[in-house]
Each structure stands twice: as structure tokens, then as C-alpha cells.
Image 1: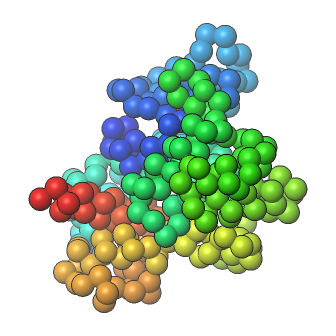
Image 2 (image 1 turned 60 degrees about the horizontal axis):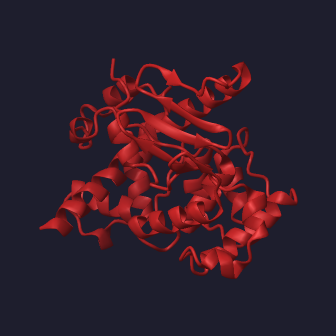
Length: 275
């Protein structure tokens, strides 16, 4: 059975200052650090049963520990995507510990490259998050809304700072519902895109990263470029509908396949920049 490769999965996570991997995956929560070593969960001694159970569920969610990778690989084995199995064996889609964190991180990634986005998110976390050892807990919505737009811009978020503040206020006022666990994907996208600061790309990425919905941002440049590389095309030839035509047939595995394609693009882009 294909196990989860923590090293590969954490390599693709947003490096935001709330977690680290040193052979053990450590995640900062408001009340301390919890870890997973590939087999066992590790908690502070003083934590009670409830805190341990909650953190365990969060860690399973963040790392995608319930992903049935064997079934996914069986679906891919005779396709043009089969080479991605060896390339990323054991990789799962990482997720955010909370829908609110997912929203902030997705908005912070709009219209900029992933490396720069990660730096801005880390800046925000250090600015507003609670320090836990050498990590930080992700800032609460209350803490974010207590900061002015100018203060948020110090994290190098640019115009996204305004979106984050606006959406956070709506969320705290109960006007923006992020708990869309039982909603259909199409309804969720329709609902989210009504709000200023959330376009289709952001809505799709939020649903994947925040709620583990089986969706993917088909218009994403990295995803289109990854498809172009795999099928020997120019990225300008690959439109959103082309991506969907290739990925949709994989049914319940489509979001995981899209993530593998995106990771392949990131890896090859990094290799290209080194040469």
C-alpha cells in the first residue's frame, strides 16, 4: 500500500511559518505544537483528551492522511500522466487547518508567483500570529481585522491587503460563510464569487485547499503550463477548457491529478531557472 510521503507533501505546502518538517511534521496551534512522524502523533504532555483528538483530526486533514493513493495510481497507470506516479510517489494534497486560513492564503496568492506569495503570507503570520516555540499559530480573524489596511500592507500584500481585511470583516460579521462542507461545488463557486476579492480561481483553490473539495483551478497558469509540457504544446494553446477535458475524466481523483500536474510544473520551472 502506498504510504504518505511527508517530505514530498511538506515540500509542496505553503511555507508560512506555522509548521516545520525535520523528519517529523510539526504544526503550531494556539495551545501548542503537535506532530506526526509518519506513524505516531505527538502532543504536549499537558494536553487533555479533547485537545489531542482535535489536533489529530487537524493533522490528518492538513496532510491528507486518509488519501487512498493506491486507487489513484491504479487510475493513472495507463495514461499520459503515469510518469507522475514515480515522480511524486506518496504525495498528497496539503490543506489548511481552517477554512479562514485557507481564504487568507488563497487571496494572498492572487496574480503573483507562488514563491513571493509564500513570503507575504509568512510576513503576515509573523506580524499577527502568536509565537509557539520557533513557529507561529496562524493569526485569528479577530487579530487580522484589528490591523489597519496600511499595517497589513507592511506584509507586502499590496492591494490584496484590502481584500483580506474586507473579507475578514464579512466573515466575522457572519456575512461570509466559509463552512461550505455540504454544499455542491457549483453552488459554492457561485456563492463565493459574489464577494469582492474572490474570483473563480480563488473560489476553486479555496474549496480544494480549505475544504478538500474535488475541484481545481483549471485556469491556473501553472496547471495550464504543466499540461502543455506533458502533451508537448505551447502554453498559449492550452485553455481552461482543454485542462478540464483532460482532467475531468478522472472523476473523484481529478483534484489530486491536477495537483500532481501543478507540482510537476513547479519542479520543472525550478530546474529551468537553475540552468
